[in-house]
Image (cartoon, rainbow, N blue to C red; front, side):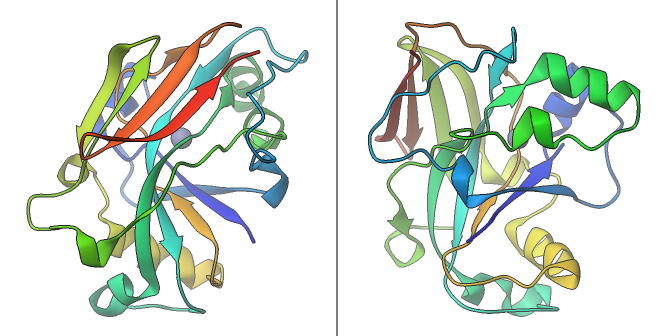
Length: 203
Ligand code: ZN
């Protein structure tokens, strides 16, 4: 399985990192080893001094697809949750300045915890999907899927032009504004439509 991540999908987050607003989705991939094993905490890696949280809606792929049209895109995902795209911001900055790939900053072990999934069939999609993220009990990120620059359908259509989606793949859909550093001892909690779906402690 693989984890596809969309970058810069909320205008306010693109602005906070001084990025241009993209005209098509930017994506990158994390390997399966980015999913933490069992219920282990997030261990702060020794190669970075600046690990940031990025809370994101995560889509679960339910069948094989390539060159998927927007019209049929929703039939390729069956569930949604919230995950954290942990990012070594200091490394990412250095690599970006040199125009190099980001993997060392994004794809490291344990960098993609994902919460419990809710089935789309149990949700109302018309009003968009709300999620929020708490750092030590304080809300630091909050958004609705309707605020995304690229919709779920546009993301699936774009990515599947290049990469075949397979059952069990995850798609991280980008983070809203409010990203920031984590420290050892922090408690991170993600909510989907007000329900707690993920809790991670930083060790
Ligand atoms: Zn992200």
